[in-house]
Image (cartoon, rainbow, N blue to C red; front, side, top):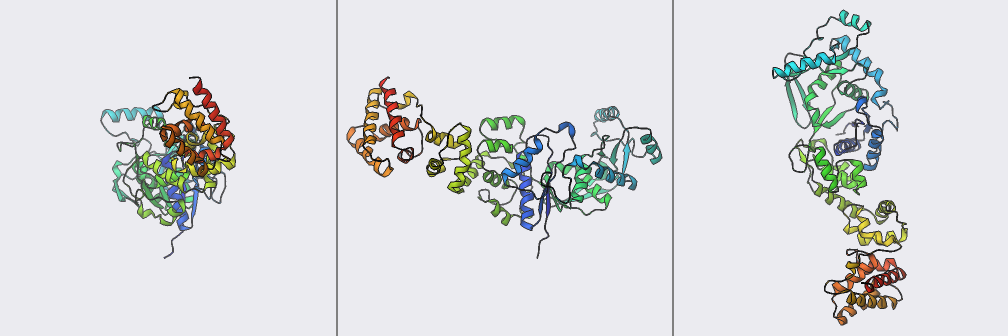
Length: 493
């Protein structure tokens, strides 16, 4: 049986940094569109002008591209259903709001903010849930028209049914029934002529022919409203999928600013730009986030192509998912191992360059096999490999003194190491390591002492990739120069 191509959309608001929740919705949208031969659309929901953050829209577009989730239609690529910014679609919403008013499904509301706040306070004193009291619901159309003609500011509210119940179907959760008497008459068009989410999203999804709406479970509370708006227009409903919510690592409640700040101190983040800067790969982030809400094995390692092959919305789950940063480490490290040497080298070069290092591409390609297995994040390359690209290293003097030895004995070891290296025609690790092993056997010093001094001297650090393979890449002259410097430091102690 052929599957109808899906048209999906990600519709973030440019009110802050792009976060993990947006990325996961975008991923699922992308997977479904590609699985069915459909289209994935980016729409910017920018009608909340007061909360719009400069640069946030560009960050969303950059984040999607970094993740590899290229959209088929959007603000910067165009498409047949534009504009793709809601602030550029004002006339469309006003037209549809008028249709609802003319049909009797919506009405002008002239209540001032002061009046609404007074009503709200009175309802709270009576221990009622705050709701619109219907002051303008039954206002005669002629009276409403007269007020508008006189320049009276108004919003447009949707007239929710008060009798019976609204049954809305969610693909993951089944039928959701809400008694209509519990529902509120929400504002759908503001006094400035811009819509609220409730009208704009519904109109746009219809106009853009969206077949599947995947979004966060926080929209479940207004799900009956959105369904009623669609039915008032007489439109076909999309397939609704309200995704599982992310919980903080403890599993108790959503991530707060405090937990997000602590995660950043620990080298993690829920914001996509931060993840990129912290050295996480798009492959690792996508694999990790995909499994938080997708009913497949939690340790399944998949590329995006493999996800497309396996993805179905039937396999998504509504169960809340706790953010587990250790699993992010696992998936990120695994995907680093899967990268080709050339690809990994290109990604690591950015981090070395940002440290002000002059990167030799041949050295970079040679060092990749030595450090690949040690990397959890891409920026780990600095601690494991920066010494390859430094003119000089600056070891801590005390680190040059091996355990159980004093400065004089350590200097003796360093001088002998210099003699051994100087005698080698080249520093291939096959040639270079045996004479050091022989020295360990004959000197009375142990391997940890000899190799420890040599490691600190030539790399400037106590932990490094395999020592002799690293020395081979650095070359004879560099190693001898660094050893000579270390000997001088030890002789002064």
